[in-house]
Each structure stands twice: as structure tokens, then as C-alpha cells.
Image (spheres, one colour):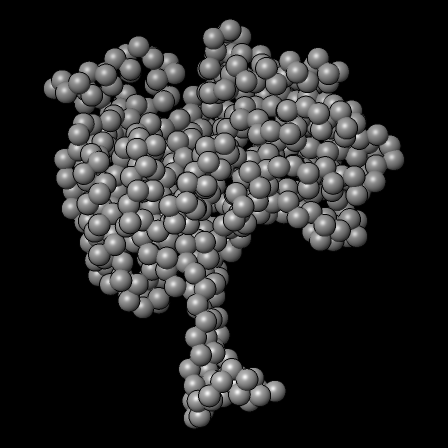
Length: 529
């Protein structure tokens, strides 16, 4: 059994109570049995631990432990930042090796938390990309630029750690996103992680089984890392009020995150936000329709409850019929199932009422439901109270009509792909304008073969932290950050999220060599001219 107490400054401590993680696959089949056992265990009853029903437990932390974690992080950070960068990079190399070697364990934990096998494998592969040797080399380049000489001085541009960074991973994908904190540590910051009580096990595993031993081996001060588990709102309040917190990394909804951004600035904290997404895909007239349709089917990973899946598509009228035929055929093959099923990508839908509301609005406006939309159980049997929804595709004609619908304007966190077919002839400026008008900005992608169209897309679409061309929309690659966006996705400071940049600050250094100090700024300027 995985069992993790509170981790404060390199030492485990008892928590206020245990939170037990049920295996979601069994929960879907035997909800009363699984939830009954969970409740009894959390009441403190001494029962045999059934590992077929439960994946492990994590201790909830107390406010006092949170305060001590912050104080320890502040005390430890100067010593940790003095560790040479090349030594701190060993943390990243070590995590990469651990993710590759322990892939099966990580996938099993994610599946226990309800992530379908294929989704879990994609998440672990994405993490591996972030720690790939090529990514680590790029990480180094971000922190230290090559030294140069100017006006008789050695000029350096370096990034220095902000200090203490507090990380709140999202409830829907806490484990994979919690790895962000490892990059924060490698940049020379101390880290306090709050594992969400609804799914704390994977986060605790990552930091207790992988990260903490590596830090110890590197000689990091114990206070460089603490791992807590308490309600996000309470943790945020403590971080905002504490002088021992410098940066807050928050994953969550846009409304809540943008409010937090204002509170962070008022409290003198740097907000690093990973919020909602409403990603668009443009399919041009010469696109390879079969490949574009396959990429659009990525919409349904986790039943669309992932911020970086494509939410809507603009399809050129000349290729619309072919694309939609390929798309609907592919979508109809996607079926629900337990997370252990290697053929499924769907997971239980949380916002079921919102799905119905948005779909009804589209249909009332003249949109067409091409497939899906039925509520079903884990065996794909129609059921009004079923936790799954068959993947749905809707078609709307005209950009103006689509712009009026919330299904295109807002994040849709359920298995609904919205396709707009503009009227002919379609001007490329109008398609780009639709993408740039999106108030969110995580990813946008294009399917086209005309190089001029590709280059214009890359040059003119400013919305988003990432652009993809003729590629998987959700796929991750070494060097490219897999998080980060603009607008309601990343806030006013939003951009492609490179932790080496986001949790550090730029410092310029001039070291004079055989230069006589001058008496005024004008003399300095004259010496340069």
C-alpha cells in the first residue's frame, strides 16, 4: 500500500487524518462497496486493506505544518541556490531516468485515479519530454546567456531564482502537472507543493519516491521541499498572507485564477497561472483530411476534461464534407469503459448539466448534431444518470453565427467538438481573426499544405502559448513547453510557460576589467560612443 504522511522540510509527520484513494475502475463497478470502505477507513476503523479497491492513502496537513513548511523553505533557499547549476541539473536528469524506468508505476497510479490507460501513457510521455536531455539543455540556456564583452566590461545576463515557490496542481490532472515543481527547484527555488485532497496520491508518490531522494543525494537543505495536502483555498490564503512565499503557481478555472492573479499582485506575489483553455484548429482547403480528423479526435481524451484538447475547429468549406465524414466515423468508434481498458480514452464527465445546456443552445440556434450526445454507463448502455457521454460533434455554418454561441466562445469541459464551416469564399484573415478574438489562449493548430498559409499562420496568429502545424494538437515534444498561454488561460503575464523563466528574474551584471571609473553618466556614454 502506498502510504504518505505529511512531508515538512525533509521529515515525515502525522497529519490530521488520512485520505484514501479508491481505484476508480472499481468505483464505477461497485460504488457502494468502494465508497463504504473509504468512509470506514477514513473514520479510523481498523480494517484489512483491500488493494484491489484502494490504491493508497495520504495524510491531510494542518495549517501549522503549512506555516513551518514556508519558514523552512525561506531558510533553505539561499543554500540551495548556491549549489552550482550543473549540479542542480542532475535533479532533472534523475527525474527523467525515474520517469522512464518507473513508467509502469506512474501509469498505474494515474489509472487508479481514474485516468484511462491511453491518457495516462500520454501524460507520462509528456512529462518525459519536459525532462528530456534536449529540454534540460534548453533550460540551461534560459538561465544563463553566454558572456560577452562591451566597452571594456564583461557583460552577463542571468536569471536568479525568485525564492520560495508554492505550487497548487489541478484536481483533474494533479500528478503530471505537479512535475512543474521539479523545474522550479532546478532553477534554484525552494518549493512547497499542495497535493489536492481529492487526488493526492500521485503527487505524493512523485515527490516522496522520486524527487526527495534525488534532492537528498544532491545535498539540498531539507527545507527546499515540503509536500502538504489541504484544501486549495486554505493553502492559497496562507500563501498570500505569508512573507515566506514569493511565487504562486496555480492550476484551475479562469474566473478563480484571474481573481487570484489580482490578489497575488496586491500581496506582492508573482502569479504563474495555468487556467482554462479553448483551443482552436483551422483546417484549410488543401489539408490532409484524414490526418486532421485524427488530430481532432484528440478532443475526447479524458472526455475533453483537459485544457489543451482542441475545443473547436474552423473547416474550410471546400474540404468540410470530406473532413466531417472522416471525423464522424472516427468519433463513433470512441466508446466509454473502465480506466483499465487500453482501448478507451473517455472518463466520467463532471459538468453533465453544462453539456446539455450548451448543446441545446447550439441546436436552438440552428446548429446540427452530427453524432453522440447520449448519456451512458460504463458499458456504453444509455442511462439518464450515466457518468459518461458519447462523444458529440456539432456543425454550425458561418463564423458570425459561431461567434454568438458559448460553445465556441467559452471553454467546454466535456466531450463536445464544435465545428464551424464558414461561408465561401473564406478569407484567411477572417479565420485568423476568429482565432485571435478568442479570449482564451492556450494552443492553436493548423492543417494546411500551402507554405504561404503555414507561414502566415505562424506570423499572424498571436493568440496562445503554442502553435502547432500539421501535427498532433495535444502531443508534446522536447524543448517545447507543454503549458502556458495568454488571455484567460494565462492572465496578463501569460505566455508559453518555461519554469526557468517564469519563477526567476533577469539580472544584468557588468564586471569592469582595466577600466578607469568615470565621473558621470555622460562620461560613460562618451566612452562607449
